[in-house]
Image 1 (spheres, one colour):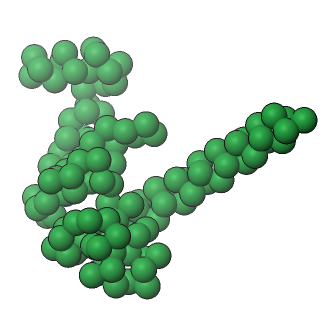
Image 2: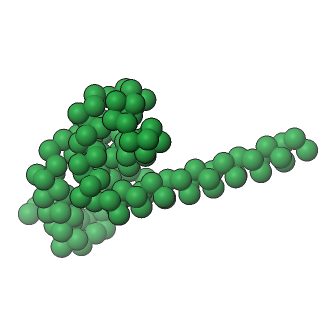
Length: 125
């Protein structure tokens, strides 16, 4: 409880909110071994436990970009097919959440590209 209190103080979040988050994430990790949750810009995300820098949304997005081919997505990402399948299983149970991350990331990329193009126009004179 002391650790929870310290965490709540550091993050400025109510203890009850942290308890809910840890309970939900713990249950999801029990249901989907191989998935962990990591803090990133924009919030906590489901990721591959063995590769915490690789979010589930990135695996799913790569899978979709490769016409659902697990071997092709695994090759592109440089990971075993079993890890692509872990992300797929999580996606099946949390489709709306993952689709939301994919949408948000695409929107961020579009805004970033538009800003870069404006900068290039200004630099070109």
